[in-house]
Length: 412
Ligand code: 7TS
Image 1 (cartoon, protein in one colour):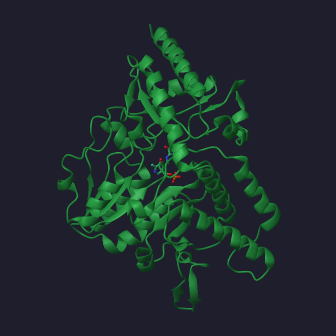
Image 2 (cartoon, helix red, strand yellow):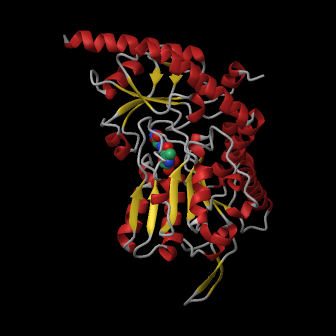
Image 3 (cartoon, protein in one colour):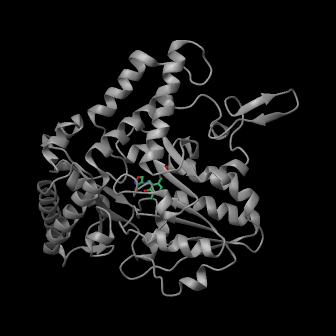
């Protein structure tokens, strides 16, 4: 039985008051909250096991290394990677994608090649490819957007062709919540001999993600969106690709042998982890993965589908006032509701909600081209997670109603 009350007790911040109102945290697509189990893993690491990794014969260093490497094993299992060596620690999704852009893409993208992205990429899975395309004389092609803010697949075979060298796509859109048919598109791209990168920043925290099933080559995620600490993320890469790639950053840790004039690279995954890594936060992310798996990713996804369905229904009361973006079927989207009204600027809506203790994000959500395609410059966005409740959706709708009344009456 999914027990949201019990889950909420694990998150100290959820009992906070904002302006004397209970916090209703609906900005999970930006950053999720942290359960006591993760906070305790961090404290325990610093109180009992803190040392540098991979270099000491002393006990603490070995203990820190074991904790750090076992977190890698946890993340590998979480996304069903074949082996932990296919997991490279990074700071976040942005750095994971940049790693691929600065290494793999330098060798494999050339003049006349095409890089395909979806029309709903976060800037971090768009701008690196703009730069690669410009530097290499390649073309960046954007798949078309359908009316319901999904990808329009009607001409897909004209986009994914033998010229396609890379398909880089977001699994779940942070701007509108759409879940993309990543497996089908990957299969198409692979048939054409392309390499596939999946931005799983929003999907990995909220639904089962399996790199073998998806058959992608690279996959990027951020710890801070999946109950983990900030400053830690991961890049999954298929071993064959990681093996042949040049390092991203160079220095200590990533070398095997060094002479004054040259060096050889360490084995995977250390080849991509120059310098002292973010040990404590990797351990924290490992604890977050344990927490998520204890509850079960299928159960989390089910909870969010139900909550999204409830919210979409509740928002019908506001359908005259608010334009909603994204598919109307809760099964085809994540727990992200993005909405807009010409009557009130999203920032004003967000500020009003904040006075009611409700945290939402307003703005372009780092998806400026998507917002432009939707005909707006910004939206307000409520994003759910495993600890959100129907009562919180009610509070959101109630506050929105009062906000709309307040601003539109005030304008008269
Ligand atoms: N890709 C997607 C789909 C995202 O939602 C985000 C962050 C990123 C990449 C970048 O992740 P980072 O951890 O490297 O920053 N999305 C958001 C958001 O929607 N609001 O704040 C950050």
